[in-house]
Length: 148
Length: 148
Image 1 (cartoon, rainbow over the protein chains, first blue to last red):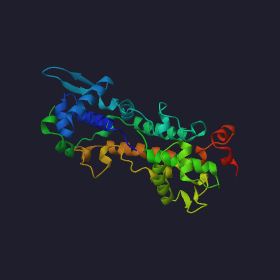
Image 2: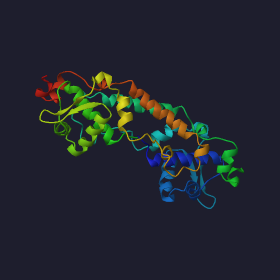
Image 3: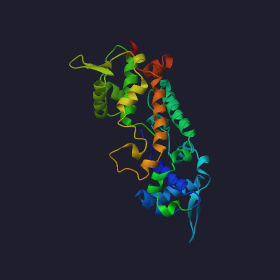
Image 4: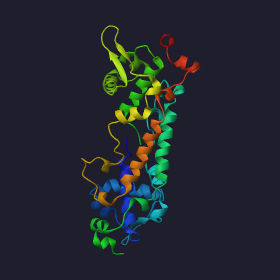
């Protein structure tokens, strides 16, 4: 069971921006920091901006930053919006050929219950809960990064 | 977010056998019923038997049946044993190149909490909860199937 890399990387971008606070970041900077594909991040940042999680500015002094404080961005909200679907098993996708037992199968409701609970737990946390402060954080994030 | 087809099909096999009760079923019969690959099912049945969910008998009168009553088979147990991993995001797999922020990232614990809760919910249900009885069930499962 896993989330897509799209959601995984989305969370990483938001964590980076949460650490950066009011300062803007560029896609290249985030790509280099995490050592992940810049092209992949372009799509993710576009999606995150479309969902209202971050603000982007174009031009010479352009970049991106969180659209609101980390404490106001729910992890559950990010996962719900960035994950393409929650089709835990095949029969959740109604465009698939339906499973023959679907009309008399109660398993779908059981799996829906569990999946909803997964998201309900994530709703209890914000980006603030996902980041830490302290000496080790300063070692990992560049010095000039933390000077605001 | 989804479970693998391996787990999906495992649950379907168990649901079929739960409906069949004391009578044995063959892999070909289950494959035909669900219209899924027999080769794929061979591996799944082998795995299910290895995990103690079903008993198989070889020979002319061979076949498979549940190893215990449906009410004694927890959905959570099936998912835990059949799903290859619960690496919700990349950093859960310690053989991957670790994410640079891992030492100061609290997100992994947040996602673990949600993932554990997903499984805890499934632990509350058994195969008995996943199957139904009644007229519609008799329409879906073959007549000779229900005569025990």
